[in-house]
View 1 (tube, rainbow, N blue to C red):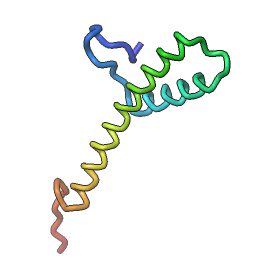
View 2 (cartoon, rainbow, N blue to C red; view 1 turned 135 degrees about the vertical axis):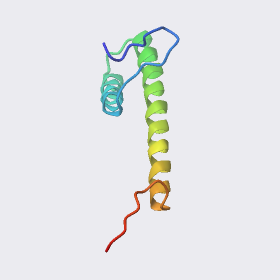
View 3 (tube, helix red, strand yellow; view 1 turned 180 degrees about the horizontal axis):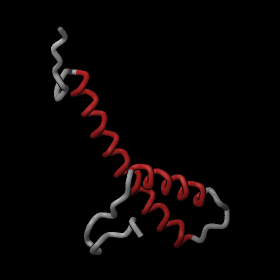
View 4 (cartoon, rainbow, N blue to C red; view 1 turned 180 degrees about the vertical axis):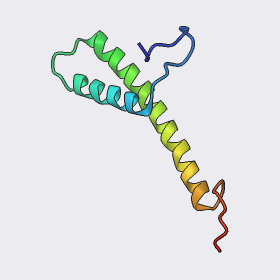
Length: 80
């Protein structure tokens, strides 16, 4: 499965879409009234990890957009 790390100390690798989908699924499960406490704790732990990673990725993209808007790392054209 793609969401398991190669070694137990490494990060779990997911695409943005996969991470977002998993976070939505976790949110739906947490909202269920029949979640046992131990499962709830694990869902909260995993959800917080996904939220942190998603926010970090969005921050990176925001920085890239800001750089593009400032004219950095863009192709230069000569119009004739």
